[in-house]
Image 1 (cartoon, one colour):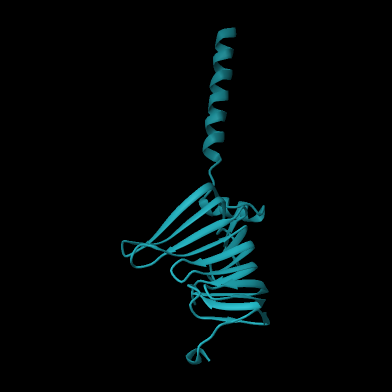
Image 2 (cartoon, one colour; image 1 turned 90 degrees about the vertical axis):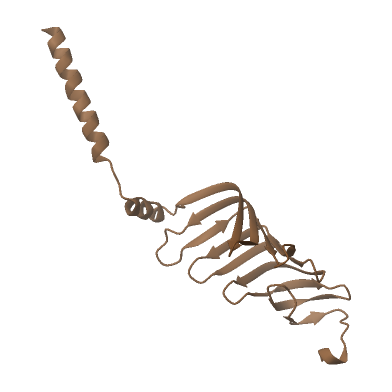
Length: 190
């Protein structure tokens, strides 16, 4: 009799356990909503190295020690790089064109605008120009950088300091505001 009671209890426990496992299924949407409500990322990665290709050609490489994906936000989905980022754009010949780096970055998915903060450096390798600032906004749709923070722009001919800077992505066409320093120009530049 004791053996039969033990067998019945084991059967009931097994049925309850199986029922519990099958009743605990959540849809992907429910999990994403739960994570969004708790302000948690839907994904994360450590030591990322992402290669972007267009028509089979490598156009950029992204490196970051930590990456968080908050694409589960309804209104403002974004990606966060809390420990820094380095982006290297590649020109059509396959050589490094521009390097962008900073200590922290946010990229907003809907607007394609990124904010990079802390020791931001943009280097155009072929023109040997470099922009340094503490905060930079990057409009990836318009291929455009801008800052209203202090900056230092270094060319082979001069060093320009100021507050407020706008440029295309490769630093070949730029506008500096509230500047100090010596600027060498030619008649055609004026």
